[in-house]
Length: 199
Image (cartoon, rainbow, N blue to C red; front, top):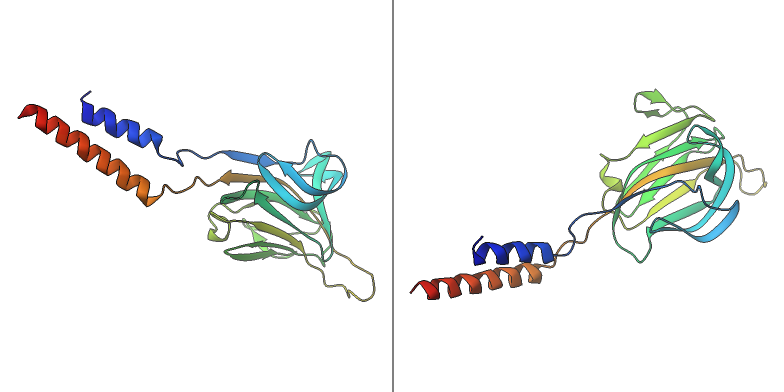
């Protein structure tokens, strides 16, 4: 392998952002109750309630739950972008749609809506494939909101939703343009040295 090829290979390997790590957030090791700053696999929820129920179609396991007018926000620990590929959810009350909000938009999933060719039913679990939806690609946050049709003044909140198995992928940082320029300058220098040796 000549010197120029070796230099190019070394420069490419030195660039940041090669590879990305994936995780499935399933709350399996979380204690029951409300957690502030719950961390799992490099991701953090600002506030989340963990319950034991039939979640992700498995009986009696931990999952997250929200009541009416409650929300939780997922971010990467230490910041950075990520992609949400899928999540499992169950709308326990017909009056309680799920709203998924990112810095790129929002999607609402309600009883009667179509998801993957199936109509969403109350108290059934669904794995929502979000991998082809740009709202969930390379985002800075994901907010999961429990909406309700109940009257907030009465104290009768009908809403309740559960969610689990969030399949997320960290987005590798984009190399800085300056790093690319430095790499090209270095390769040009090696080429000049090689040419000089031939003369």
